[in-house]
Every structure is written in structure tokens, then in C-alpha cells.
Length: 101
Image 1 (cartoon, rainbow, N blue to C red):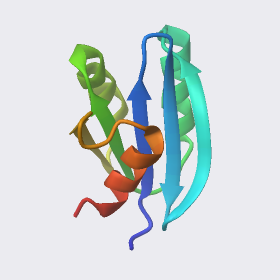
Image 2 (image 1 turned 60 degrees about the vertical axis):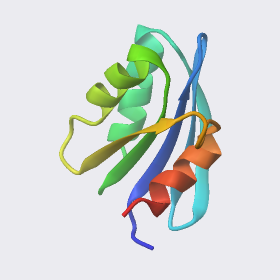
Image 3 (image 1 turned 135 degrees about the vertical axis):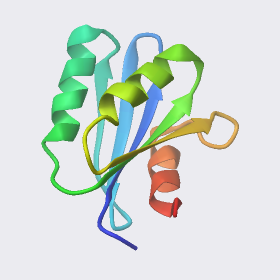
Image 4 (image 1 turned 45 degrees about the vertical axis):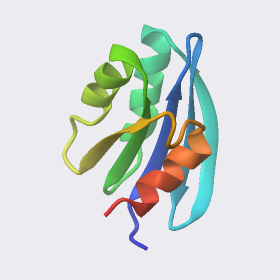
């Protein structure tokens, strides 16, 4: 297992739920408002982590794509849009990001 930070992101109408894992251990489970201020706070939270970051986002609509483009723009980040049928909960998404080669 590598040391990439793995973040599962589930975007809902009112909030954005995330689960953060590294080396198989859950580090955080948080929620941000689904508005400009909340997404800015999420971006700052992720930017505070050092090293490579893998983001697995439950793919539903253009919002998931937009969030992926913004959060994945920094060097060392990988973004995966995951079908909700495969993983929808933040914890399942972060585990998905851990297992992606």
C-alpha cells in the first residue's frame, strides 16, 4: 500500500461528505456545505495535506466533474469519477481510491 492520501467524495444537494484514508486507516470523516464557501473550505482542507492525493468522486451530473476539475488541478493529484452503482458512500469511495493502481 502506498502513502497517497485517499479521499472519497459524495456530493449531495445540500452538502459534500468526505472520507479520508491513508495506508488503510481512516483519518477523517467530514461534511462541507455544497455552496461556494463550503467547496472553498474543502479545497483548502485537501490542499493542507502533503504528498500525493487520490480523489474518488461519486459521479452524478456536472457538479462532480466540476469539483473534480477544481480539486484535481494541483500537481500530484489523481481524480476518479466513480459510478454510484460501484461506490456511493464516502468510505467506499476512499477505499476505491486506495485500490486504484
